[in-house]
Amino acid sequence: MTFEMSDQATILPTGDAEQLAMERKGLSVSVAAVFIVGTMCGSGILALPKALVDAGWAGIPLLIICGCLSAYTGSILGKCWTVLRMRYPQYSYFVADPYPAIAYRAAGKWGEYATHFCIVATLFGGATVFLLLISGNISNLIQSIGHVNMHACYWIMIIAALLIPLTWLGTPKDFWQAGMIAAATTTVGGILIVIGLAIMEVDGPVTHNNPSFSGFFNAFGTILFAFGGASCFPTIQVDMKNPDKFPVAVVIGIMSVLSLYLPVSVTGMVVIGDAMKDSNILNEMAKGGILYTVIILITSHLFMAFLIVINPINQALDLLFKLENKFSVKRCAIRSCTMILVLFVALSIPKFGVILSLVGGTTITATNFVFPPLFYILLSRQKSSADAHGPPPQWSKEDWDSGTQEIGEGDEDYPQAKRPASNGPSDIPWTTFDIPLHVKIMLIEIILVGIVGGVASTYSVLASLINGSADFSVPCYANWGIADP
Image 1 (tube, rainbow, N blue to C red):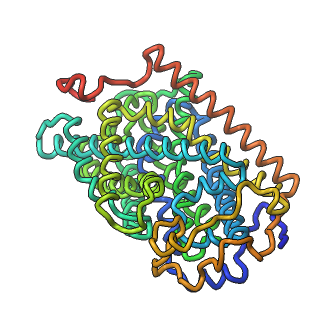
Image 2 (cartoon, rainbow, N blue to C red):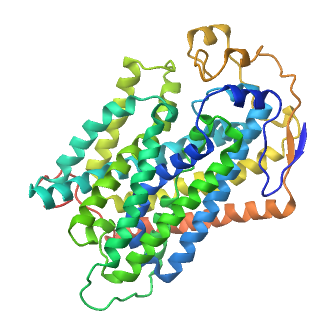
Image 3 (cartoon, one colour):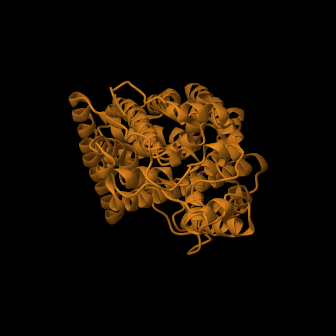
């Protein structure tokens, strides 16, 4: 099977894949787009105003460019998964780790290991940031309204305890309401932030100094983090009713995210300017009804986004420990241990700005801007099954019967009739595609820009940590008496 792939084209399902899309349940395009909004918007909408101040006026086009590139590379990642589903029919069923599967089929074991590492580091860092933001927002809200001055480190532990049972849920289709709530709350919250900033009175004139090298690339890392949802994209795509339409969902989702980021960040930059000192824009707003409402909305979003972000890590652990694709005591125990580790890191680094910039410049750069175009190019070079990495996926009858296989039997969303008939060589023709030269050049440019920008951003963060200029604080367990971590 051969087809032509253009820059705008999406691989459409044919034959059995089309029939399977009609029979299976799953997320629609609109719900998948909402999940993307819910996954990405939490920390970005709070941290980007300070990032734009640090980056200067160049931060505005940089934000737009990063958003557009994220939408494009996200759609490319979706096309990679569609290629795999066409080449290996077994992937039309549930797959616990789709992004590493793409990496393995495209680049071999090194790609799989690198992708696993980057995904875990990205999502773990994101989950830690979300936990810190939730705790800080609730601490500020309780202190402002209830005049209860409890140390924020205690709130980190309380929120972690509340989140643990929620992490026991299965996959995004098991808690699709979380994506809906996260997207709705962050949209309303973003509008209220713009209104609150617009009517806020600022002492003295607003200034905008030229950015330093370190400040600009630290901000670049924060901007990259704000679009760091690619690690979750394949997991969402697998749960779609028609996974081949994911590129449409990712473009809609990221453009919606960008339409929220721009007004909030630009308004904060224009209204407050260099007077902005805190990485969380909520700490710069005037106290009152608007601020309290925004805190409640954004914190609700972060609760839901936390569940989406940590879920791929939990699914990978389920696969590692060969857990059945259903609720169990062992699943609860393993996922609780993951949450305890997130809690430890949050207590160790109670200021989220450092995590934001460091993860943004390293693993998010890889998963968002380097791996998708690289794997897409490598898949296009495989003109026959002999060029592919590894044999076709194989499962024994015992795997099917026990329910421990990577692609699950017994789930009503995946009809039994569509199970692979055997583990032998597939009789489906090998799918090949060609990338036009101008598209290939653009993909290579994206890879190079991602590498250069990521290295510069990471260097800036590490340099600021070494020279002491980073916004760093004492770990909670080292000094519980500090006024505010």
